[in-house]
Image (spheres, rainbow, N blue to C red):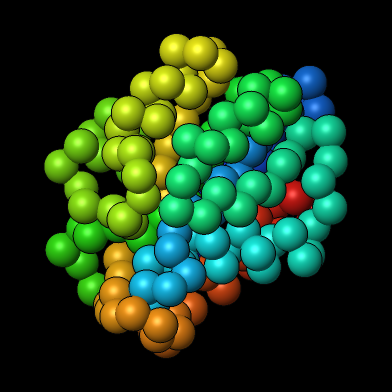
Length: 168
């Protein structure tokens, strides 16, 4: 079965051709757990943290709705890549996964966090000298107090499984 573009991008970062090419990657889950599918990134980070141990080249960070508060953690880790995982309104089917270039996210409505991801991403690129990408998950419902919808939970499960396979 052919891989989706997001899987190819993820593979290029997490599974290099040689150990010498291995990048340090910070996986950052973003979202608000009180707003249904907006919690997709946070849930992804939570599930990943249960399955993989942080190692010298990967760290999983649950950033909640204020990812800018964790820039110190990222600075200390000194990543080559920061992968932001967040609900993103992309006018697609619920649960759709899409790899997004941070510089193109200014027109994309994402979680209700305090700082736009384009501003945070620019800061990370300039200050940490790293690459930044956003793995967006199309939400179905952002209702207060609701659980993740079925399609979004399926997308979270896909991401977690793919990362676990790539990290071996």
